[in-house]
Amino acid sequence: MTLRAVKGMNDILPDEIGRWHALETVLRRTFELAGYREIRTPVLEPTELFVRSIGEATEIVEKQMFILKREEESLALRPEGTAGVARAYVASALHNREPVSRLYYLGPMFRAERPQRGRYRQFWQAGVEIYGDPGPGCDAELIDMLVRMLTGLGLQNLRVLVNSLGGADTRARYRDALAAYLRPKAAELSEHARRRLEDNPLRILDSKNPQDQAAVAGAPSILELLTPEDRAHFDGVTRGLTALGTPFEVSPGLVRGLDYYTRTLFEIQTSGAEIGSQNALLGGGRYDAMVKELGGPDVPAIGFALGLERVLLALPAVAPAREARCFVAPLGERAQVEALLVVRELREAGIPAEADTRGGSLKSLLRRADGTGSRLCVVLGDDEIERGAVTLKDLVARAQVEVPRAELVLRAREALASAPPAGSSDA
Ligand code: AMP
Image (cartoon, rainbow, N blue to C red):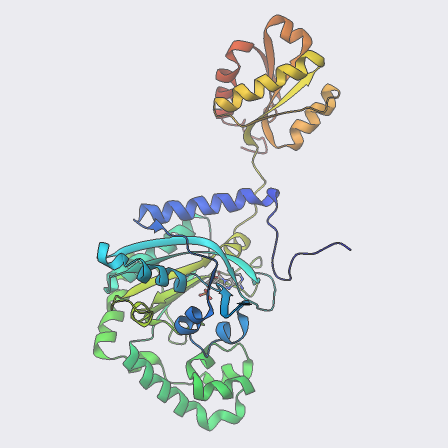
């Protein structure tokens, strides 16, 4: 019987990896240009960490964690990155070393959700966390960086939703107001929402159930209940975004699925057939209380997480470009040995190269060269060896030249650096 991958967990095959690498490069470059440094935390954490930070009465903690029991310990595969980074921030006392920490991460996350297009059980997230800066300018700068990054990647039809959940005070008053509004409508709510009504009414705003959505349609807006300090903070964020020319919509119904958010909350969505119903590319917000909750000092924080699969689904698929690599095709017995020397020399000069060691006709070797996606083929025949020469074939331009063996590295480098001819599949 053939074994399959775990449901909702995907292999990323070499054919697709080029798109992943390209996206990861853009992410890292964007974050590093803005002063974020990478942090890598374990994939496995104490279950308690997520219960305390994400919140007990959330979908993630109630239903979606992959939990491992080992001896007395309960461990969970991380469903998101923020809690682990906050734990590491507290454990390493980074706050003692720098007033503001700007960190980023990239890695797989795990949630036992019902798999569908754009929603998986193992998926990749990249995100940043800023510790130590409570100001609204920090929030506006982060959102602006993300919009510019997504636009630069070629994504269109972006919707930037922002909201404020206020601090603990506002949240508590809103919780009561929302519960008071929904209680008389309890009969119209789904069974799940009825339970949430008492333990976590804000989550009902997130419900995908049409009955629940109808019931919350006229609910009071959290923005009306903000304290003057929360209001001033939110106004600072929207003023910053306006000054930066970043388009956004205020969306009072936006709550997102994690309980740790305070004040600013945002989500960036895109539309289009490719992405389907899972249209949120990234989401984030402030979580000013988490560091303290995890035993650290009272340090404010903000962050976001982007789903790499979602972004790749939303980006137009482009034909894979020929790579700047050489395929070395030996014809004859002497050439077989020479080919090994040639690839070694090319690699030592920093040029990716592989040699055919299976043998065959020129036609079959050229077919193999094409199959590897290499831009250049170095053809080595016994008579060329005799003359101290090799033939360089540009597989995109479909042109070839014979060059002295001693100039191989130089000429190969030049050919690989040259632009592919207009009209070729790579132009
Ligand atoms: P969250 O951690 O729930 O705030 O989600 C942040 C982003 O991660 C979303 O906007 C998605 O792009 C991505 N994401 C969340 N859950 C999944 C999932 N199950 N599969 C794929 N991507 C996801």
